[in-house]
Length: 587
Image 1 (spheres, rainbow, N blue to C red):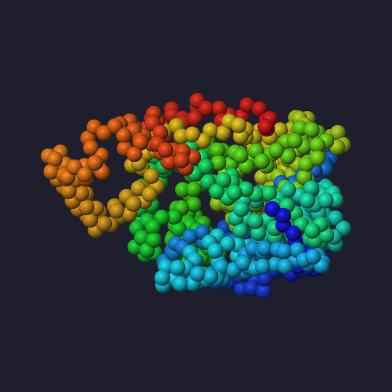
Image 2 (cartoon, rainbow, N blue to C red; image 1 turned 180 degrees about the vertical axis):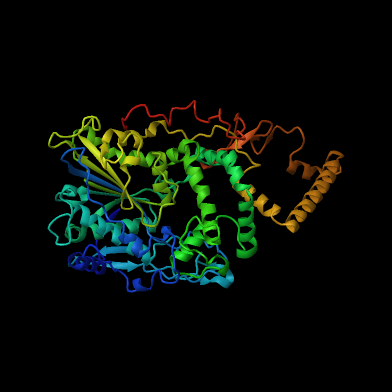
């Protein structure tokens, strides 16, 4: 996919911003920016408000244990910016119409000059909601579409990167000389841009690169976007591609820790409140965040966020924390096996160029800058797989940065800390987190590159996505949620018991008639007569299970039951090699 910087309005605006905006000033992309983040006194950190984004600058390199150094490569793993909801679930108030700027551009080259024709794409068709013919969201937005706030966030990210690695405010060089990134001549060779095929990730990456590269990008004419079929890509967490991921999730729901959490009085109170007051069930974290972060109306009963994410009195905080904690618990469950498996192929992609460069001693050319534009789950899984996840949900426009430095240029490195001539620095939303990685020295911003290769290593050849256990039908998130709703109210529970009694009575009567041959023969054949060996070509005598989409809907037998609990002596994967780091070679 070729992306050309043909949107002149954005490009010209950015060039003016580069030349006239001090590093501490706010970059304003939209005329509506002054009205953002004004409705509420406090906003969760997930919103990434304008003030929060301004605090995420790239810090200078200060420690010296590695000796004199030279920056050679930067990889950025990005979360898209603020977006619309990904479904039309409500959290207590009707959905207001969403208004979005043109989402994508189809460009056609003019034969006469270098100008490009752009075709704005707006989701304002199919407006017959009274006949159930409408878009999922009211207004002119698609689900999950990047908002103007999200565009602003990515422009700010791009300017942070530009000032740190390319040019400072006077355009003479980077803010810190030891962070100068040697991009060279051809940007299409010097910059690798990877994204999944989602509007919000594609556009987030484009805006960041436009702000970061500025007039250099304008002169080059554009960059190539490397992507894949969305339903087959590994930037997100598509469980359908790997049935074993669903198995990890099922096993997590059966653990003692989750059952205690999910069956607590607090959980029951929150679910009952959500159902009776907000009129909804299931995970509403997306609704909560897209509502407050875009200054939309919150239900009065949850309009109480006071800036404390751990508040026990704010119902907004309690609900958001309840659903976020379920996701973070899964990410770190059983030594982060879910995160290791779901992020493995992407980690291999990220490390391919880094490892090639480091192991060649810097002799093999790789793009000096790489951008991977993804989702919250992308960053969370990578951090959890390295045992560096702080269990805080990644915010809009989060950036995880990996710098590769050639070290010991002056022969003064500390040999006790550095065994190779390359080191790395890791930065997450403006904070250096290098020393949080296992084996890295405390207080040092740069760690030996061998630690990064070990932590991020993944051999795609050994990826095992096959289920080991039969799918449990009696314990799934849907069943858990339905059960919680039933037991939370006496009337619902009484109705449930009445329904069970009626079903048992009717089933017993029908079974008696069936075996007494009072059921017509043609109906018996449709049902499957006793003793029949197959039904629609599928053997039915043996235990069976479904293996997810990867099994094309076929049933498989021979699987043992999924363990019920997480006893201290039980591990699900101790017989496998796919999560054991045996070396640091990528293939």
